[in-house]
Length: 384
Image 1 (tube, one colour):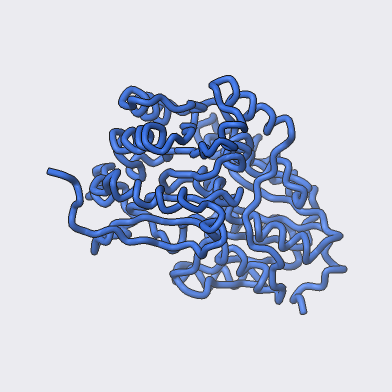
Image 2: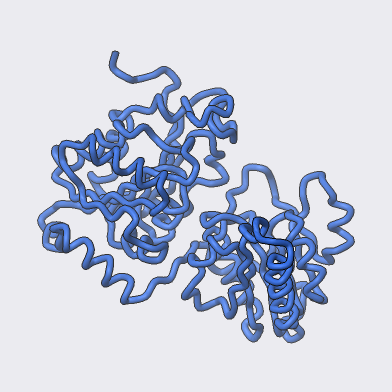
């Protein structure tokens, strides 16, 4: 039985002030609360940069946006915008608040919302006593190795409800899908090429954190292999930030076989439409990696400092590659804070191509196989 009676809940507020990938991994939890309380209006409070990943989600009635950049505004302007957010939350007349992180903002808004029932994640140590005073439905994650999807779902489980569906979701429109197809066709792709045995492989080599990225020349080597040796169609995707554009431009300058490039040309939902159309996604630990997995496209992801058990692509048919180093994962921004990760730099194109070939050999079988984390040898396999 649910710990909160559905009949008494008319409005729910879920808070997750994190980045895009984490928010995407919380969409099964958002859906689960809507299914548990179908008559309730559901609001989600998030950071502005992450909000687009939730647009079009049929389980959300209102998206409340907070912009961390407000901190740089003059005091009165910042106060005006923060007050508008508080007013919007109060106007929702929240009966049930859910804070999916241990951050201060979510803690404060849980109390400020006026919700009668307050669900909140407890930290392992810090301020747990204070939080227990604010949350009347506190919860903890089962163990430190639990994937983020399951961690977020503990919020609804704390009320006695077992979620019916655990797959992250991104919703895009027919217009967004058509635009992606048009962009592909403009650069020579057609569905007929797939029918002729030329798979479409999406490569997303960038992350907002440069220490999570693989070396440019190695990405170029994989592109050249896929196009030159496998006869595949390759589409390179990336964000519009200067750092991501610069990295993708360098990769394009190194290749012998030029791929389709949609770098900086898609929004998040269009990126999802691209991933849905792709036969295989290859990239690094990033939000687009999670988007591709949500589209049920087989993913091959390179992991370095990040904890693969927590952040690997969720679902079936995915492969996570990580070096078998004693220091992995370190959760640091590169070795010694250098912004360069040796555990990624010592992965070789040969090791990665071996996994790509395995997936392309029988994509239909791969889609139904359990996901795995494959440890690559600690000894460098690079040719001298």
